[in-house]
Image (cartoon, rainbow, N blue to C red; front, side, top):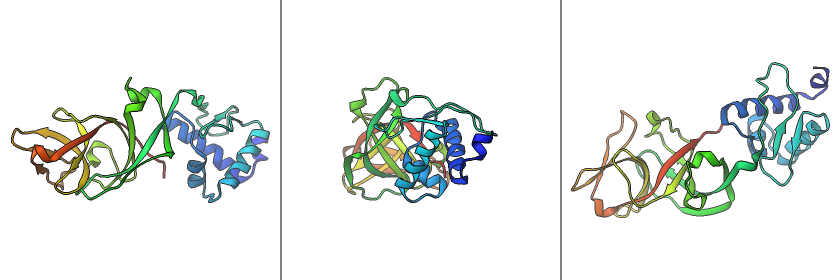
Length: 221
């Protein structure tokens, strides 16, 4: 307890955030996550405080990993969930944005520098090379627990079953969107999960499935 009281308020906030983040996600936050949650704009300042917490015996750190942090000492009034090793995390390319709302044009740019790390079990046995991530904009899938700003993890596929949540490319509109998929024979119905929004109907020849949703990641605000 005395060791904890010797820490700066900023350092205590970092530990509380890490404890909360681990409870929510089951794996460590990134430096950017920590900075955003604790009001620290500079990654170098986050790094400085993390190193101080290592020196104080609260953290272990693997510098070569973006989530290479581990809580090793309980904190007062925390859940004290020890952050597990990030060895089972996989790097998934973030390929841009997708709209969960009325479809709009998006740019798809494979960016491994901004790759996200996800637990291997979230892929459900799918080959990691067949998986990618997209950031969601819009609220048409809000009843499916997908909100604006969430990150969705998808398996690459060009086919879908009725009821699958998929990313689809609409070539006549030069647009892409996230919706539930239903094949109605002569047309495809793309159904939102928001009672205030109606479905989108498209000719099956102009609706290309790009991926099926496997899981969803949400940043703490």
